[in-house]
Amino acid sequence: MTDAAVEQAPNKGAAPQAVLQYLAEQIVDDRDSIRIDVESGPGGVILRLRVAPDDMGKVIGKRGRVAQSIRTLVRAAAAREGIGVTVDIVD
Image (cartoon, helix red, strand yellow):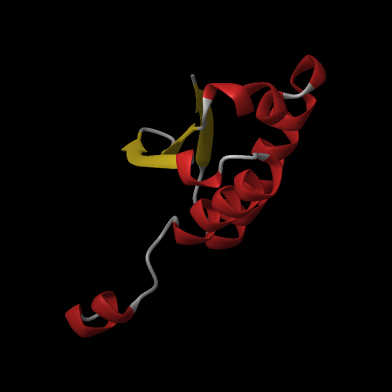
């Protein structure tokens, strides 16, 4: 791949981050408090989701079912890009 082709390539990890942003916006009440930190890790990209304390229970869900569903959907978006992703929900 030439340098010009690399510059035009889409940002790796953008789709999983967009999916996580969309899902979080649909779940929480305080959309302005959503923050997603992105960093590279040994297994791919690490996305850290931060929401308002009042919305934490909604994001985690009963027995962590909502959180697990979020992770599954974001991993599926990352798989389409051929990367690994980990979603951490930080309080």
